[in-house]
Each structure stands twice: as C-alpha cells, then as structure tokens.
Length: 111
Image 1 (cartoon, rainbow, N blue to C red):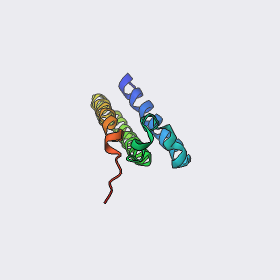
Image 2 (image 1 turned 90 degrees about the horizontal axis):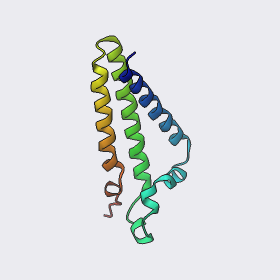
Image 3 (image 1 turned 60 degrees about the horizontal axis):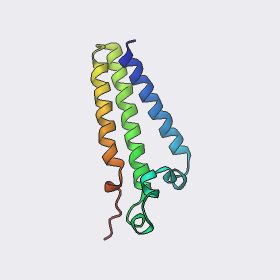
Image 4 (image 1 turned 90 degrees about the vertical axis):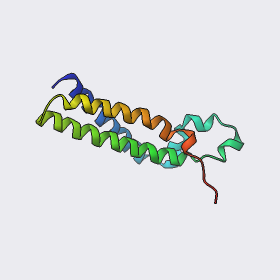
C-alpha cells in the first residue's frame, strides 16, 4: 500500500466516523458547533439556519467516504495511480465544501 492509498483510507474512515458521530448527536446540539453562526449578531442569526449547514456537512462527509472507499478499491485492484486521482478529487471536495457549508448558502428563504 502506498502513501496515497493509506491517506485515502484514513480520510474515508475519518469522514465516516465524523458522520456517525454527528448523526448520533441531536441536530440542535450539533448546530451549536457551527462557529460562523455564533459570531453573528442576533439580527443576522435570524436570517440563517445552522441546521442546513449540518445537513450539508453530512452530505459532504458521505460523499468523501464513498469516493475514498471506491477510489481505494479501484486503486487496489486496477492501478495504484488511481489513488492519486482519488486523493485530488477528495481535496477538491474539501475545497468546494468550504463555500457549500458556509453562511452564504445557509440563508433562510422566505416566501
């Protein structure tokens, strides 16, 4: 196993463990962990819902776990170079998730 394959396994199972932990904790309690929400004043907090960020975080963690495990299995059976591609895809997902989970995308839409 090369270093990229080990890294993919660690990232995939760490993401899966975080997902399981967040799923076991109540959404109300886990939304208290969103730092950007608690740095806003009360008027701004009324515009945002941290529960949206928790649901999106769960989606990102599942996606990272699936991509990581699939990439590891493909690199194990087909070609070890696939692990490098999978590692780059996971880093891209991390970069995308910063804006996806952030406050700009967690606005409450009023109809």
